[in-house]
Image (cartoon, rainbow, N blue to C red; front, side):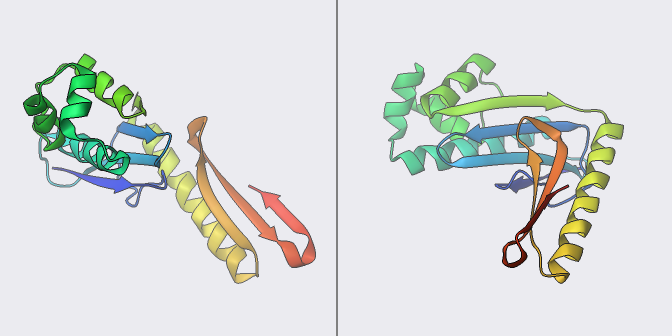
Length: 169
């Protein structure tokens, strides 16, 4: 079955990801990523619109824009836009989803990855988290993140300012 782990730091909370990644990046509101997680065998085609609709709703509310205004800008009825926001937009054309993203200043990014690539990336993230935890025990400040230009790469930044030391792993 499928379940989704929604993260705003672009790092999955569960390393049991499948070979599919769907990301929605908002320039104004940071990065929000939806990570499919294989758990219960639910149909992802029915779950994806629900999560994307929730993300669109959060962005619209953050902008303070009424549904009617955004729907008019996109060129759809308020009822269609509402259907998208409540997760019933599976039948809405891709062109409409892209227009909704543009109307809310969102960038769409869709990526498919092989299971081997996903597993390799999960191992890489676990190793970086281990480095960060070990370094923190030694007095380092540590930040682990995916490289924005290449989400298949993870980077850990270490800093110990009192000794003037820094490292990138």
